[in-house]
Length: 185
Image 1 (spheres, rainbow, N blue to C red):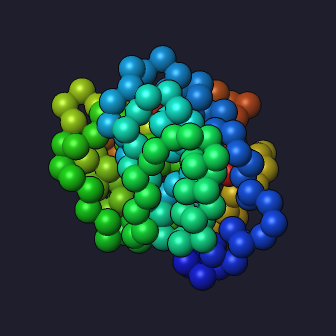
Image 2 (image 1 turned 45 degrees about the vertical axis):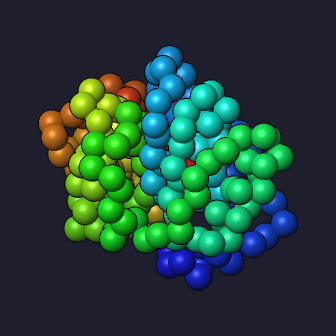
């Protein structure tokens, strides 16, 4: 989907993914001490807002202006501050080494574009930082639900590189440092 399609999707009367954070985000990040976080592909901001509420200084990036406007309104209602940035992730260049956490939740791009986003994400990590990538596993087509139906846009333990496959969780795909499955960003 392109920017206009996401703008249209986020323009509906209800939040697309709900107001609460993604369950895998909370499971994986609840114990991390707050620092600087970068949420790439924030959509309506639910994960960024949750992080900000836990004391993180969050920069959240998306190419949907409508999604970002909804996110900003929700953050205001919850009394948290997030730096919202309107940008295409495939060309976005975050500050090198500027973040203790980089989150990529449900960004399913063609392989070359995803590789560019991952390179930028890794470059944005401070020493000792955490990169959390959550998305639909390729096995999702046959045994899961939701997500893209193009297998080239789905994750496998080896598709993220750097030799980190995450922990095995066959009921929800694989999760952890690499990826997992849930119903949306």
